[in-house]
Image (tube, rainbow, N blue to C red; front, side, top):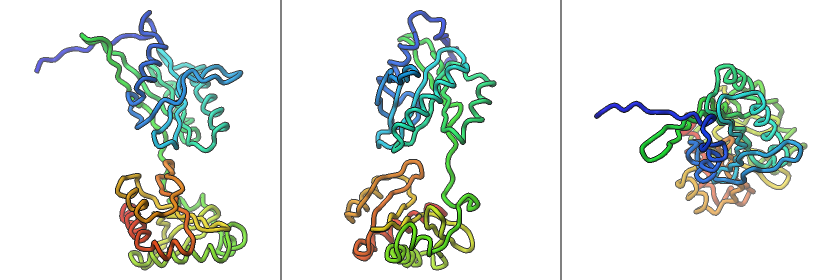
Length: 288
């Protein structure tokens, strides 16, 4: 096969291939960015006093949003600040979504790569470098993710940040004796495949300890009227089918923690224990 040297196009100096042209290409098919199954939510979104957000994208499952700022040429201070500002406005206005700031530029310089890296972990920030390539049929675009958001670890992987509490805290403050008792019933199911499992009481959830260490393939949040069980599994058709077949009260899928969130009461735990056992066992095996 013959080698052919590719000819790149400098978009910033091109009078035809403008920023608006690039914006329209992405808006027509956001999948070209390679950040997953995303859809266009808004374009040139007006933020009073802050300008216009180039693109607002949203995960097809509806949980994640991406505030996208486009820049031709190399990254500079103003675009980076603007990207973070738009992200901050959107996350405060719509806190029910997981928000990610995305900056797209022709050249992510080493200086700004270092600066952006400092923000990442505190601000979910993604940097994508775009390269325009001239072809016989037109101009192609190559999007390269040079900085991704920091992936969050499993709940309980670092127990030092999880404030330990005790059972009485959950029985009196967050839930009731009855709803904390539902966590015991889930533990009984877990004992069928993990006999050494114990409940671990933390300020924000009840997790599991196995053989002296956190093993949170699932967590529980007792409430006043029931129990919320969060089972950590990738979102797949097979798992969806199990939940649908059981007619479990599915709240949503948490894309941030990659967990199925299910609302339970005593009756549903008793009547659906076979389905729950399957889901818990699958999450346990996936975590191993």
